[in-house]
Length: 475
Image (cartoon, rainbow, N blue to C red; front, side, top):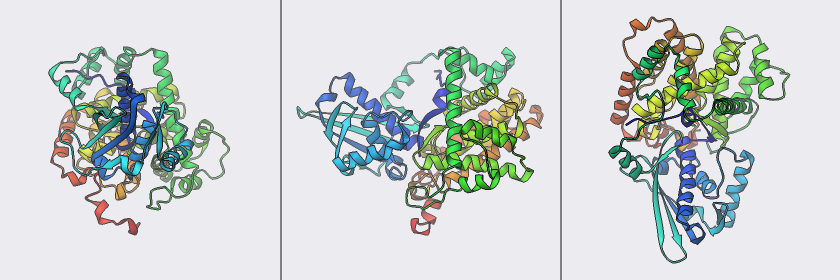
């Protein structure tokens, strides 16, 4: 069975703080509404109840899962909703104890009683949620979804059906493993980004590919810009001080710019001292994940919790490594990153609830390392080596968010993942691929085995590690 995963599946635009706990449930609510519409029953609904299970329940409040469900059920789109309107919409639903279901029908809705946090796990996946709708004729309808990481949402019966019936991928280059990707590169004498581009062209026009990739980058750039220009305390109760603002001020001083694009050019003109390079990379990563933690708009790359790694490494390339780089290199970088992420998703997981933080920061670091390696002139063999090196040094990383919030240690981990990605790319470029000892596919297999061996309390449950070593009051 071949699985087509597009770059645009791996790099999605959405609202923070979590792709699996916020964006996934939001999309599940949209799909549930569509099921009601398809059965022509949405106008007969009198009440809706949502049950959250496993990790969604244990860390759902810290990840704004309840907010996401209310916004999804009310018909809002996470890709386009005005961020400034989120709080007012949620507060209105809470205060009025009613919701405009699918933006079509007003029904009663008490978020304290109609969103239920069940600590038990469903057998299929750690992130399960069940919607139950009650109709005016005293019947009801139930549907269960699973948020499997990166904003991907599936139903168990669909997965079982796929196991029984092979689904043929439409891509001209069908890739499940890194070795297959390398074979195509050698056979076609193409770079990884060129192979990815041919696959994308089988699904959409070249104009659409260009515009969507640039829209993704513009969202990343805007996110970094907002994070670097917003000060204060992050919401959630940990009283985490935003650090990107202060770091940015210390680095750039008095700047002459008015928007994200002119800001980028201003940084390019800034004389960056050697010791400041890592500070800039950390600043960019902090900025993204502070915006993410504040329910801002980010790009899942491959998740929201790891959304700062890829934009900060791409920004590093543009402002430190290559001032002449433009849209061509940006698109090349994003296509390589997306393809490497898809191989990890097929061979292991990108869900912290299934694999710990190695599945988020580790994968994002591997994606960024590979992408940076190619735009810096690395061969396909070196690109895959860069991804392997980056993941090798994240194996076993647990996910233990304090208070169930994507703040401690998550925000700082993005800076570390970005710096490791740069280091991995440099190491790969300086290494003869013939001397590589561990293929990328082997490290992906090892990551998955590590995920299966890892104790569940270290998989985004806030029941182990720092989450229990540090009390909320300590923060």
